[in-house]
Length: 480
Image 1 (cartoon, rainbow, N blue to C red):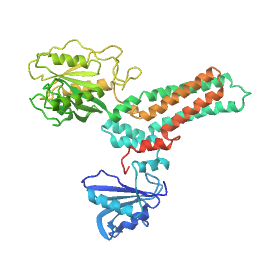
Image 2 (spheres, rainbow, N blue to C red):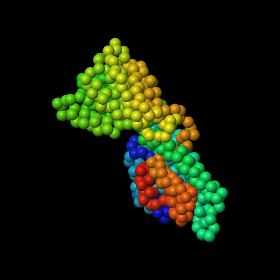
Image 3 (cartoon, rainbow, N blue to C red):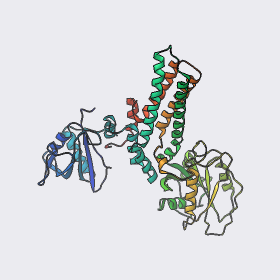
Image 4 (cartoon, helix red, strand yellow):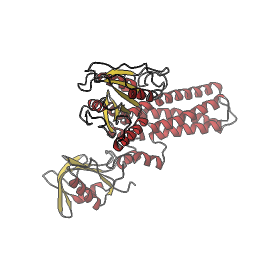
């Protein structure tokens, strides 16, 4: 892998002011030199240029000028991949970038695979696996909080904690294996107590990390919130207000929305995927029937329901049916059209006792305490003027993530892969502690503890498989 030099367009395709191409590998400078013609008094050929310098010139393809460019030379090891790297900034647009890339490939580079630059940075020891994942999180972040969490992970805050945990487990494993080598000597009671105490501390630490998994999931992928209600209650108007722009068509004609519309909005720092659904009613229109079917699919996958009701009309049979239908879902009742005389009276209602994300206890980021059935929040709102919109945003944030979001919380928000590895590690540590307490064979205790050490090592990439790396880096874009 490291004998090849790779190249790719690192910026999104499309028209723009600039496009950037990245080249990395042992022959980066020579390949760039084969197609770069320096221009200007101080520009140099890439192989003669000093590291971390920029040079103006032209890219030549089969004797023809492709574009005027700025070429950056970065010599190993002070680069992202710890290889020789060249970056070429050309004019934006599909054709200039495509032609520059073709020129690089014709001169010996290979087209990079998705995430291959970051993969080389990991394999060359520039970053660990959690930091590599943070690069993807950084690119895909949709709110400032998600961006902050990705930056904390990229800075190695999670890695530091995981490495300390692994070191502690390795020390315990060394004690256990030392006594396996000398079977005639039992572990002294005070030494055994100290080892068990270290294992308890590791269990506690892993439990704390595991409690951040759901918060991390919220910041990374968001919460799906479906906007439901009978036709003409203001669902599309509510979506437009939440997004701050006219995304959905608003009309007094019932059945205007015939398909689901999904858009992500930043609600108090949290990415919420709002889904505008077709008005739920009986219909003979085939297109509307299909829209209602798709709405039902979206509702099944939604984690939060915004049930919109017309406050200027009495509660209808359709409203009652929908209130009963979504009683098992987390929901907020939105009483719209508060600019008109109120004629709506709501019955006593409860919500499901299950939290959006089951977490232990109650506190910052752990949702509300749903040990008892709770009355769903009712927000009075006018979608015409936006009055009450801020109250609705507060209610959404409170239902999804109760309490304040502190910077220290963002440092250790694990993802699903980390969660799975930590669960395996925790089981191994628990079994080891039990074996030590019950004087079970040290060989069995060592096996479980090795499993835990390897599982923790997987998080930062100290124990990996090719399949694991393929799975992680295949999710990256080409050029990163």
